[in-house]
Image (cartoon, rainbow, N blue to C red; front, side, top):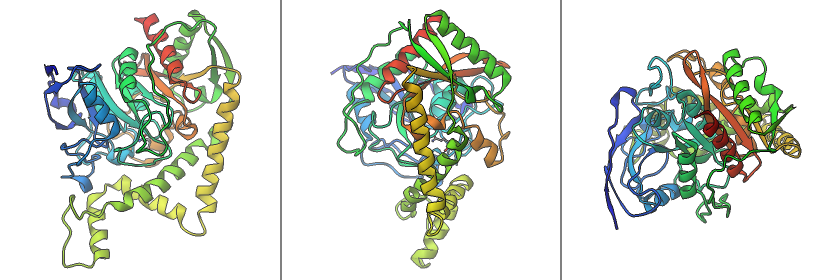
Length: 433
Ligand code: GLN
């Protein structure tokens, strides 16, 4: 087996890493000698994994997530765990208990979230590749804000075993990198069936990107260029779509009427699932120490109040409320109906086009502290959550700048057509470089 010395210089200016570790890798696989950063909600054997939460401080997983095991088999070196919004709840990485990550393009701005540490580490050139997770945009948003590439795979294509759950029915682990080819290589390593994830599907990914997109039909949803989307972002993304037309694609306008309810459906679903998933954290083995003389109930309350940040507590309460008897039908059940409608709208559009294109985010990266209210922060997820509700693949690829900041072009595809969204992103990237 080969031994590889890894070149890895973490740059502390951006607070992208919560933990840094090995600088060597063993093996001769596809990623031999490559430094890979891993988001801190993905379990790494022997390496502290906190989800950027005080409640998990000191937790060292006794096992690897499936995706991490595959990275090691491929010869990659896990060089560190990246900063994120606590448990993935956020769009800026400001909700980390360990301080925000800064955007390498402008340190007065956020890198996006929740996989902000992974995106910043790549954008600043610290690592070529990273794993992120995307529940409602957490790979694509920071990819767009930092000017790198990020793919949210089709639901079921990458095992969630060892991912510390935030909202199981929505989230996927996915590849992030500087270029589309890099992202595709990482996807080759992490995709495939795993019996330890009951939603895993037998759909390995063995694709090499192709830039041939002649005859490709692209749907342009009017909602992705509507009110609330920055004119600067619209201009850059429209120009990028024009580039795809020059390469032989055709475009056709389409509509996603269920977009009116998509954000509400997402926030009800994710908070309900979070309230259940996060009930297990009791601070007994790690996290803030509990006062031992108190009753279990009081100690549990104290520990959770001290261990969870404001946004996490807000979401646990919202989800608990929405699931409580008498309200379940009014909120959770309705959200599932809206979710079905999103799926149906996509299925209908995909009967006439091959992919859908639009901006990844409605604006450029916010200034630090700019979105201090939860609602405007939630609203900025409007263009990314539909893909999670429908379980379809979606990629963000850099397509220019507005006010000096990177803008992302988002390409969404039919379920299990991750290869196609990769190809479209690749065709675009090759044409502009
Ligand atoms: N910003 C969204 C949220 O706060 C998405 C986060 C994510 O994908 N993990 O839930």
